[in-house]
Image 1: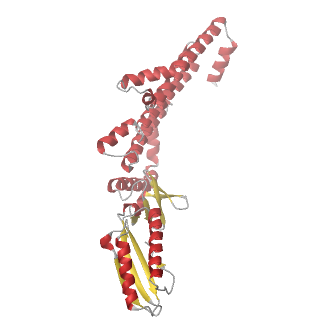
Image 2 (image 1 turned 135 degrees about the horizontal axis):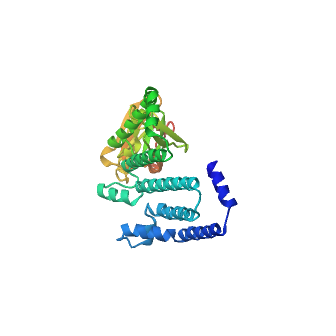
Length: 351
């Protein structure tokens, strides 16, 4: 209320001198608004004098915060010229300091973005890429620490006693400790995932009844997107205490096929068919040659079973499915040309 009444008193008792001060203040604000980008560019350029590209200068993580800082500074100096009451100007000063804290926080937070120049240099040094799980995880840790420190500075700036706040929290420390157990477990599990690397961002994993592509790994959780395009959020503590199948890490995929021939198929035709299958698959691209196994598997009341088993170096799911389709066409074509009849449709096992 004192702030509002101070403003009202200032405007209700305007003099010619006050009007002149307002005009000067507006000129200062407009001046800083117009030249804020120039001032920001010059400051960034001073610390990056080797960079010649203007676009790279403007992409610097401190360019936008500095641009905003000079605009805010223009308003602050403009208000200084108005000779406002002390209680009003004290609040403006506090707001100005809060703005500076927020802008500095943004600058340092952007500094630790995985796409920033700083992390790009680290990536080049340690052979990480911008999507590397380790880079993303430690980026989040660094930014979290920056925001925590900034939060404490803001609380202090707003006049709250941090000592008293800590004492108040101490009263319910047992409750907080119990509530934080799961958070701590998930956080430590997150560090374990980063260090052991059972999976990384972009990998396709299966966890219990869930499966999908890993999109993000945070302090507490891992997010995966399933085949229905839904986001599944799993606590890291669960991921480190259960079996994980990482389909992306596989170096090859298995192809298994069971063909059932009519029971009265001549042995000569069976032997000839097996040889034709082997010859065709041996000359087929993307098949690991020494993994090809084709056998007269079993005799049953249904007919004669031939098993076809081999590995392919195609690990991408879509490419593998196209490959299976081509193989099935080839095998069916050979079977028909050999005048061998199938008793029932092809039975495929899950790869």
